[in-house]
Length: 67
Image 1 (tube, rainbow, N blue to C red):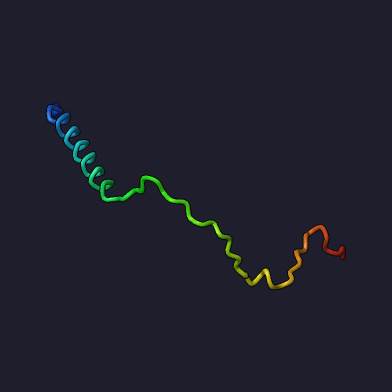
Image 2 (image 1 turned 135 degrees about the vertical axis):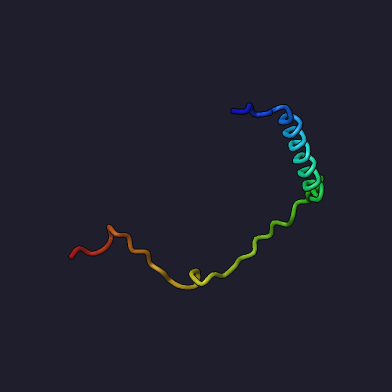
C-alpha cells in the first residue's frame, strides 16, 4: 500500500488560512462603523393597541367556579 504524501499539506493549509484571512478582511472593510454614535431622542410615543381599549378579564384556573 503506498504511503500518503504529506509534503505539500503545510503550504496548502497555510495558503488557505491566508486566503480566508484576506477575504474576511475585505468583507469587514466594506462595513462602516461610526466612531462615536450620537444618542437619539428617547421620546416615549404612546401607541394605542387594540387590547388597551377593550376590557378584558383573565380567568385563572383556581378562580373558576367548582362544578
